[in-house]
Image (cartoon, rainbow, N blue to C red; front, top):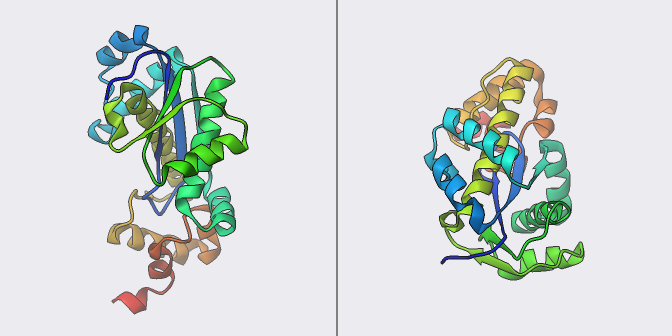
Length: 217
């Protein structure tokens, strides 16, 4: 699907990662920015090497209106305990990101990578008075503005993870694999289980595997 005009793209990073924050980003670009986005090589952030990703992110932030919402692990866990639904939490982040861009500039349309029922995001936008036409698409990164947002979100997540690794003196892995469980057990052994609420998303199954490793041997 091709959109024209001043389009806000929205996407998130960290949703499937046990460690680290949830990051939602929105980015505004118009038809006049098409050549700029193409020249940068803007595409789905999952297809871009990390070093290149960070470089593209810096240029996107310098040239385009954008908003980044970071739910730290502490805030994520507090909100998830209240909401009990990840898609509702995503809708909250997406609506805040869209609103943040609209505070900077006018736009004709917002396009989000689809993450759940359409009405969840629409309702969240209405609750904060965010009025703009909205499209929600599966594989939304095919839209350049959504791809740009995915790069900004992923780059911020990468930077946040690097800060956590530096803070705790351990390489904190991304994802939710067995390697993540092993890293979690090592961190708990060093710092105690009280470290986890400020480091990880506690509703993930990894949480129990980290704390009760003998149950999964």
